[in-house]
Image 1 (cartoon, one colour):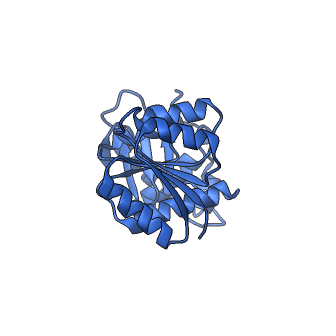
Image 2 (image 1 turned 90 degrees about the horizontal axis):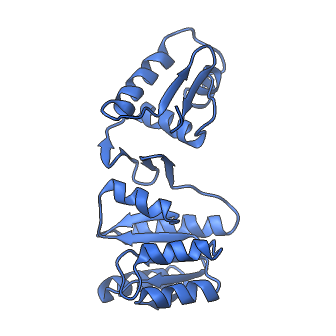
Length: 227
């Protein structure tokens, strides 16, 4: 792929690793090591994506991201951070980041995430992270967490939750679930949905004050922060 990437990273070894790899992958790369310089460049020049370290001299990465979004800059931003807790990802994404990658990381994963962001910049929206309140699903690493607590989901439960997250705050009917999650074009009249919903709800809501997965009797289900 080709495109113009801004790397804002103060660690010399990491910066060299990222910029060298991106250039070998065909990208034009600009690098700065200070948050304020990153804010100036990202605000005044056109980039296809920004790789932003979270801890920076001059101005921290999250403050830079917030300032860019407040100024109307919509360039996709990948946040790099040594803070690996899953709830820290939520903080970064809510600040305006489009993706979040923890250190240490493999370049192949960083490149895959950058390619997704560049495609999004080109008009093809490719989501890699789905959110609902303190619930986070990372589609690339296939990790799910709520309130920083990792959730161990079976493959079907993961697919079911992904569908709910993509339809957050909307009513989802049994027919929609059968067609989109199980690929059934008819109702087999079994308890398959009820069983999976029950198991997913237990993993998702048990131990938390606010439930996210709601049943609308006679209608369907809804994943939402709202009661």
